[in-house]
Length: 353
Image (cartoon, rainbow, N blue to C red; front, side, top):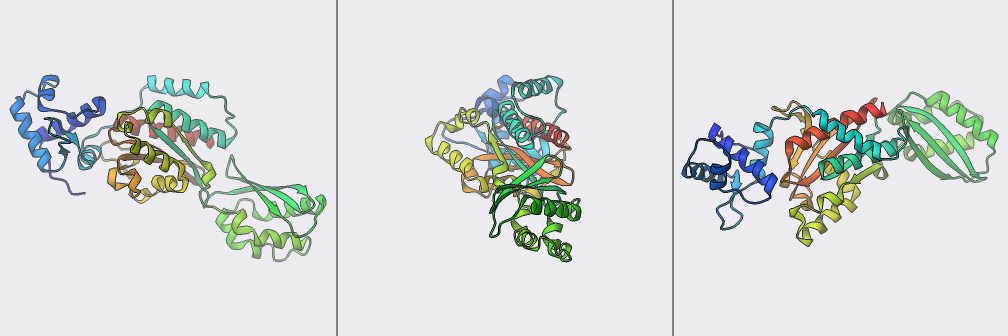
């Protein structure tokens, strides 16, 4: 986005309009700024600065009142060139720790950890929080187990990179014994452990080509490799929380806005795209020094997300990367949300590693 080079005075006024609008959810007028902020400027001078900002597209007048609200361009300028994100305060950390303690979850179960992080991020930010389990393309396969459900049905349990587990039920077109299954498990774990899922998919038939024992069962595993060792993000491992907080915000006093939000929440694949679509645009914010992706309004490709801002950041488990973020009205406290998202990502990386 091309920006007009704003003067220090214009930056000050734009920053105040955004901060005041975030707090009050009401258009901001020149008289309000003159009265509440000691800029050393008259009401008339502030009015002129606001007129210039409006001409450049950074603020707009929603109706005939004297007040102005930020545009997508105004928010983008603020986020890229004005915002400064401080380190998270100890008091905020204590609040987050307290929220985690209130949840009864198993810290050794990755699904419960991701769910807990989504709940805490939603309640602390008062926005919609989304946590997606890591993309598994670079995840290391640790071991495989099989549970015999019947003579022609097995459950395959894959342990992947630290705490992540996938279970897949397979129908067999042959009957197998427990002894055969144990033999195949031992062989697969010997030959595949330590490889990435993509390496296994691309080379499993070659790695098992010299095996003559239990050939029928092994052939079935090879034929099912694309499904068994699938490394795409798993939609069931997408966790959303905070709906009860976000719908209380003034932006959602219109039924259509609530419907748009519900549609987004229900479309899990779209939600995954929203969080991952700006991966290539991930940069260290020039003023905050933090790796965040902030997508504002119409920068989001989904038409239902045009009134929202999406703030996301990656977290890491070994060689794998997941993503977490916050989705809320464009009128959000960007500095605080960025701070929270980054802190929660660090905490999640630490918890799962």
